[in-house]
Image 1: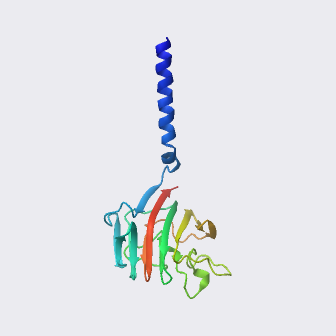
Image 2: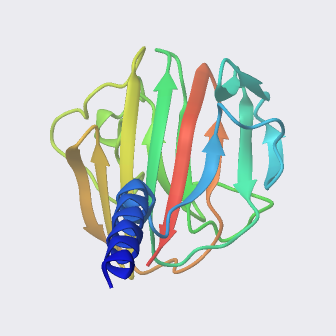
Image 3: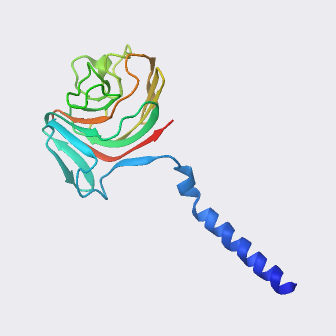
Length: 200
C-alpha cells in the first residue's frame, strides 16, 4: 500500500512538472508563425509579387529598396489576429496587407493596408493606420530606427490595430471578407523579425 502511494505521488509530481513546462505553449495556442527570421532558410510559404528585393538578413526577413513588391501568403484568412515585429528606416514604405482580393495584384484598392510609412505626405495615413479606412486628426506615432509591434484584429467588419500597444485604428468596413495577407516592400528598408496569425 505504501509503495503504491509513493508511486502515485511521484507520478502526480511528474505530471505536474510536465504541465508547468507546457504553460508557454498553451498560452500561444492557435498561433501560427508565418515569419521567424531566426529560423527561416527560404521564402517557402510565400509568393513573390513585384520587385520587393526580399532576403534573409541577420535573423530577419528584409525588403530593401523594393520597387512595389510583396510577399503573399499561401493561405487566405477571414477573421484573425496578427502579431508582427518589424523595424523600418526613415525612408521605408511598407505595410501589412490583409484580406487581399487578388493575390497576383496586391494594392490598397483591393485590400486593407496596415501602413508602415512615417513620411507619407498625408500624415493621417501614417504608420499604424489602415489606409483609406481610418483617419485621425493628428499624425500617427513614428516607427523609424527601432523595433515595433503591430497587433491587428479583423473580426467580421470590425478592424483594430495596436501600434506598440497604442490603439491607432478601431473602424468598420464590409467591402472585403477574406483573402491572403501580404508583406510590402516599396522603398527604404523594412525588416520583419516575426509575424504570427491566429484564426478566430
